[in-house]
Length: 242
Image (tube, rainbow, N blue to C red; front, side, top):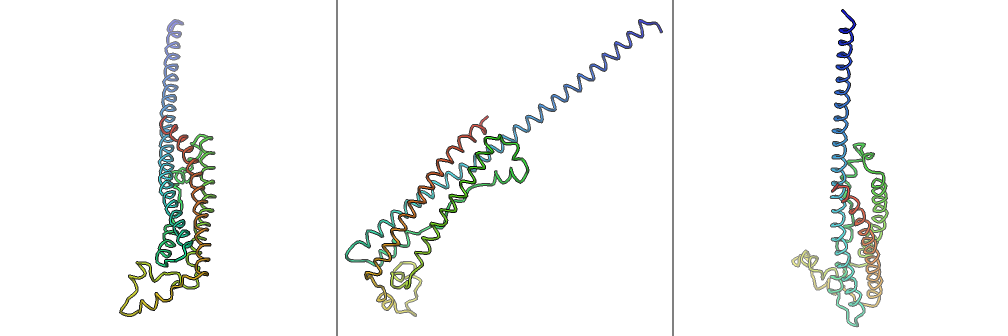
């Protein structure tokens, strides 16, 4: 075999090797691009799920703020009734009840997406800035909910902390009155136990003032949290849309 043929075969072999190498390189690059695209899609899905959770938090807060406003309104009505010369135990009992209505239904954040990210070990997929914001966000919520629960529990304790439920008008409340079997119980005797005296007035005025103050405190915390949620929502919205 002459030198020209050898050279030709070598050039051909080198060309084949070069084509194979280029093919492998292109395949690797395409695979990397595909994996990166999958990764970006996965991140976007997480961001969108987190955004949905945050929006649910905002809707929940709007409802809770409305409920808090309603309780504050009834607490003010209660305080006004107690300042009148003639006390109406039935009105007072009803306003007491409305002042603590749903008070233990406090804020519970939606954490399904964040829990899923952490449990799957994918927390590292999130951008560092977003991750830090989320950790601060949920930590802040935990602290706020603790304070709200303390206020709510104390309101319930005050409502039930009485020496006599008859004295403060419980037998007059519609659902209590409806549950008392008049064939077994003399309701007139129960009504006589209701005492609208000065000690009754002083105790309930103190409770009403607490209900108003506690409600105002809870509303302020919820409104501050609502601002934090709006900020978190804007950050996640950008990531979800990109």
